[in-house]
Image (tube, rainbow over all chains, first blue to last red):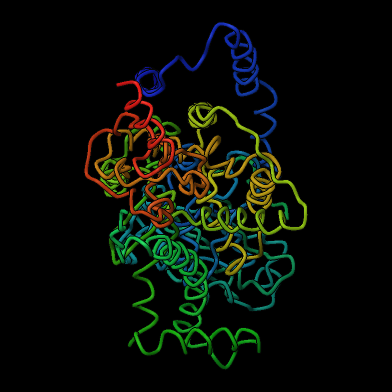
Length: 223
Length: 332
């Protein structure tokens, strides 16, 4: 980052005829700059970043980088949502804090990803990686989360044959398989698109996606 | 008596610019509508739509039907906003987006840097033309200026405060540094063109306007009550970057001192408060051409030059120049 600061200073000095900061304003700048640094490195910003935990459980669109990289790569252009034919990609508002504001999310219970892979193609920065639309490539490279079945809620585990999640899955028998009474078992290939959660007929849903970017917070089966 | 050579095209350059601005703004409204329409088409869902959605579908079909054979596919060719967009498979991004991403991620993503190349080259050649000819926020700000003029007829006094134009460089630097401290592209929340495109999209295709719309509203009020075009001139981080890039632009407006009659119309019409009549353009000039269009004697023209001309003194058709000449004669 040092080179960037140096370049900016040099550029500013060559462009403006007198220095941007004279002696009178220097102390002021130090005061404000120091406050900004403190703000960024201590409690306030940490508080802002913890808003993420209060935003509930959400998925990133398919092909998203790890969360820290995603926040710094995503330029908030909104093209992924515009390209999404299922309109499942939505955007956080300002209440979500500095790191999340205007970034895309998917809430699978509201509308789940249909794995069309158009968002990755349209993303200019590679915050969403372009991924070929092929079942096996998708299984290898997409990891939005993993489905988890709550056997206490699932109808099939309660003796009433259901199997809706199995029928909704875009990768049946690869990501999810059914046993006796169509009891669902999630397999390792599950990419976490959320179509099972979207279609679950129980209220609250008996199958839900644990997001890959935030598995620690959401490993408990809470609504 | 000097007879002005009426340059037909240059007389209308401001109208051309307004056409350009309006087209960009209208396309920012149309693209989300088309995006929604495209989703309806690809879902084959006409019979399932609500009555108001059917109206949207019919209207968009009416507009696009003569040009498209396969809307679901062809409408995907143009996407995005002026912040970053896809144009027939060619991705174009705002140079500020590229710079902000480099600062926030502390990494250079080459495929993304390439998308900002075309605007950078155009800015180096044509200066801050983006601010005058394309920026969707400029469309709102210029309408806002006109609103101020209209209100002025009813006794409203618009803000005339003069700030230091270098504030915007500080805003740019501050946004970039805060971006790298927080690890996010922070500028996108303080850069009106990015906000306008995004908020229109949110308003039309998603749940509704966000806080960004309020921010743009506040900047409009700032322009109205504090300083004319204040945000663009003093605070806009993108304007700062474009000013830096356009320092050595080739296309410049220049005054022909021999046909200038000192009428000061150019100074009055300049949105950015520059003084074409005193040959003061600098990096701020966004080549909008308002002064060229308004000049009654065609003294202002676009020229290809590396540097602005040095101050040339009073215009040769003005009374001040005649007085000077007379004094010289009497002195001699």
